[in-house]
Image (cartoon, rainbow over all chains, first blue to last red; front, side):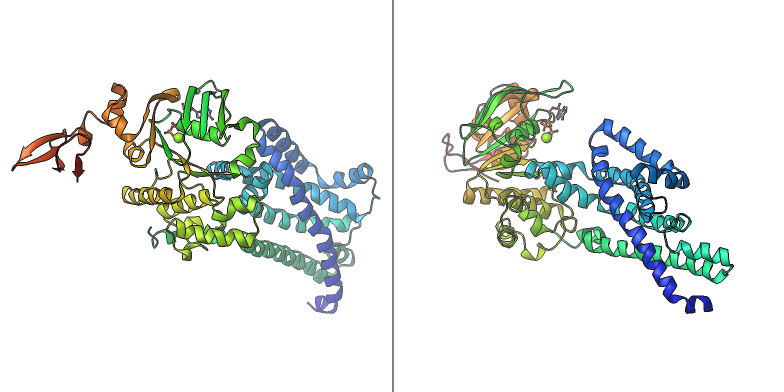
Amino acid sequence: MNWAWTNLDLIWDRTIDHLILSVPPIILSFVIALPLGWLANRYRLSRGVILTASGLLYAIPSFPMFIVLPALVGTTLRSPLNLVIALTIYGVALMVRVVADGLASVDVDVQRSAVAVGFSTWTNFWQVELPLAGPVLLAGLRVVAVSTVSLATVGAVIGAQSLGSLFTDGFQRGIQAEIIAGIVATVLLALLLDGALVAAGRIALPWTRLRKTSKVETAT
Amino acid sequence: MIEFRSVSKQFPDGTLAVDDFSLTIPSHRTTVLVGSSGSGKTTLLRMINRMVDPTSGAIEIDDVDIASLEPVKLRRSIGYVMQNSGLLPHRKVVDNVATVPLLRGVPRKTARADALALLDTVGLDRALADRYPSQLSGGQQQRVGVARGLAVNPNILLMDEPFGAVDPIVRAELQQELIRLQTELGKTVVFVTHDVDEAFLLGDQVVILQEGGRIAQIGSPADILANPANDFVASFVGADRGKRALHVERSDGRDVLVDSDGRLAGVLVGDAVPGQARVTP
Ligand SMILES: Nc1ncnc2c1ncn2[C@@H]1O[C@H](COP(=O)(O)OP(=O)(O)OP(=O)(O)O)[C@@H](O)[C@H]1O
Ligand SMILES: [Mg+2]
């Protein structure tokens, strides 16, 4: 543990690097998955195409992806941007299905009545469908957040500094404490982001934590 | 005034839900569409706010063909109340009531203040304003639904079996409340039900529908009860049996009314002059 104490600065720096690599893909994958998931949920034809395509994205092995990506998007081979893009692709692959399922889970009667009182397609999406799909979206986002944080460690291999650099460095120099510090910090960071999402959900989706029993105490 | 002119609706799967339907719905009165399940009541109602567009024929509101109106805008100007309230589960009661005014761009503060006042109008305690719909009883939810329907002060209020899912006692309460509201507000109410008693209680004009939206009879409750147009109507409204088929029997020197099952329905007070008889239950 001495290693960790004397290298707190380093661990902190790598943690920040790791956050910079993993938070944008989490946000981006959510934002990109929204319209795709909406389309998938909206039309039968687009559902098949979009869900199959996004499923296939997830099947791309990560190392070939890192080699092919720079050629495709014109980044240099060791740019951290490659990692951000790759993580976003994996996040989107997971999130599209989640968004489609979340939107499909919204009560048809509620949507129909929203349309009947004058919600347009646009306002209905933002004010009714999206919030009501919230619990499903949140569950999906938590999976994406944790898996992105863990996947971001591979950045070390392709030259993007992250908590993964602590493992690679620890291996090369035979410092076991550094490897352990990297693992522990990665897990803690994943837990932290997960906790932040849960907290955000509690604030954004207050109606989901009602006591359903209160029906008993009220009468007309 | 709402005018149906030879309206038909055939759904894509071939179902002819409404076949050549014509009707004039007078303003400031309650018109009740009553008929058994599948007779096209909901379809007719949903055509008024363009949730469903007719395959042929036209619907006019105050002489304007609604096909020429923008559906979203039209819907925001018409109150709509449905069974199971259709409230937004993620919004508090007060925000549910304020929903449509907010969509129409009324400032949040004004909309919420108006919504609170509407809770009074429909007989709900303001203390419920910050609850979510799932924290209310079925009857309270329906009241919120009515308040939401009234929130933009619409001329037209469409109600699709609004009291169909609450118990009989609460239903009777809600019906009385609607009668009170309607005397105060004088909206053009189009009310759908399959309960004949409810239709007769609430309707100034009652439209009895058979399948395909075919009109069996239109009239005031008294007209229909006194002169059922045919056997279907007579049997649908129960004029030929039960508590609606009363006859006079003499007992202890007074006239009492007895229903077709032999149960005492009331006593005749005053003279048994046609048109002046009153039944006291
Ligand atoms: N979207 C639709 N697609 C196909 N058929 C439909 C659709 N909506 C309604 N129908 C059919 O049209 C007919 C009339 O339906 P509608 O819902 O208007 O009846 P209703 O009188 O409201 O019945 P209920 O009392 O059960 O509510 C029924 O045969 C129904 O199955
Ligand atoms: Mg119906």
